[in-house]
Image: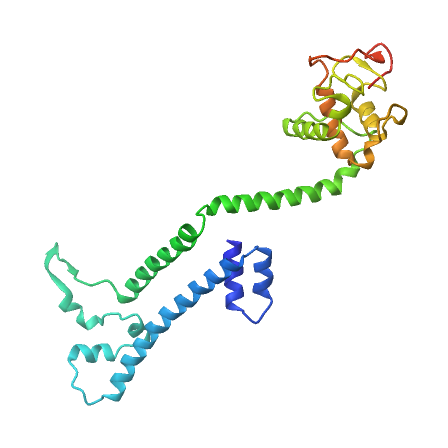
Length: 283
């Protein structure tokens, strides 16, 4: 709808910046602009032809006042401009339209469909044919799917702005464990991209310690793990990930690491550090 509105404005106000601004915000393509312009020009052309025909009829009647006209023609001529424009039938001629039958004194008029209505009807058929050719013949036909994809893309942009704005509000003093499935999956993606080289894909440990057992080197719990990931362990070769990940990403990957506890990957590394619960210890 926003695209249609932008297209209407840019065609209705070609010398102003209103339509152009709306069109840019609506991401109108050049083909959509040309198609819309063609449809608008076609509509105005048909309307212009219709008006010209009426004007020619009026001009003919004006230039030929001596032509003998029937009573019916004179009735049409005496109508106001509105009735002439829509070719409405004069009320005085309704008697000629009464059908032969009647029911309980109710008479029916054999009144044909007004020409203006037929004009609109055939216009919708023409518009439908052009629409089908443009969007389903020449285009891919996936109109709603394309709109959905565009909305998802816009939502991702808004989400990125939100994350950049609020990510720094998370720190090791207020960080909490996230448990939603989509957040854990996002944390897993961060883990797969950055932590597999040292901790292996299943967390069984390689250069780094085993993340699936109950033993920790630097403290258990989300706050301790967040601190370890954020600040790193330089003496053990673990970098400070706060230079590459924002606090929200560190929260997600730390929460994912906690989900690895109790899993049974193949060839787990031997326990290191102190068992959880015996004393303050960790990752």
